[in-house]
Image (cartoon, rainbow, N blue to C red):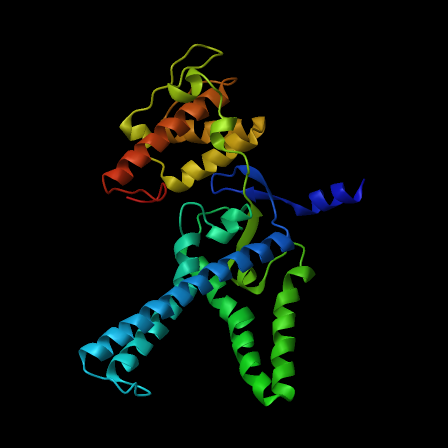
Length: 303
C-alpha cells in the first residue's frame, strides 16, 4: 500500500447516527485546521480593528458634544467606550465561534473556506454545551498563553519560556492522538471533519425523481404529507444530505428503512435513492417554508 493510500485510510472513520446508520467520514488534516483557524483569527482581528476605529470616532464626537477639548487621558466618554470595547471584544472572540458552529453548517467562515465542519463523535446533533466547551478551552490552549507570553516577554526570564512551552504543548496535542483532536475536541466530544466538496444538486439525480418524487425505475410518484414530513427537522435533513452525497447502497437502504419505519410506509426494496431524493426535496422545502414563516424545527425531538 502506498504512503498516500495509508494516509487516506488513517483519516477515515465511521460515524454512527442515533438511528444506527454507519456513515463514513474523513478527518480534517492538521494543516487545514490550522489554515481555518488563521482565517478565523484574521476575520476576528479585522472586526476588532473596525470596532476600535468606530469607537475612536464615537469618543471624539462625544467629547466634542460635552465640550472636552484638552484630550484628557480618560474622559467620561472614553471610560464608557473602553468598557464597551472590552465587552465587544469578548463577544467577538467567543460569540463568533459559537454563532457559526451552532449553525446548520457546523462551521465558521474559516472552516467553510477550507472545506471543514464540526461533528459530534457520537453521531448526534452538536449541542450548545459541546461548542461552549471546545471554544472555552481555546482560551486555555491559545489566547491565555499568548497574552501571558506577550506580557512576560517585556520582563523576560522564566515566565516567558514557561508560557511558550505551554503554548507548544497544546499546539502539538493533535499530533499525538490518532483522531487529531485538540484538547477542546477531547473534552467536548467533537471531531473536525472534511465536508463534502460536491454540491448536493450535482449529486442528486436529474429529472423528475429529484423534483417531483417520481421513480424512474417503477414510475411510482412519492408524495409525502405534512404529518410524514413533520417528524424530522434540520439535523435529520443534514444527515440525509450526507447519505445522498456518499451514495452508498447499504446506507441508502438503512436510511430508507428508518424513515419508512418512522412514517409508517413500506415502499419495498430497489428504489431507495428515488425515495430518499423525494423525501429530501420535500422535507427541505417544508423546512425552508417554515423558516420564512418564523417557525423552526431543529430535529425530530423538537416540538
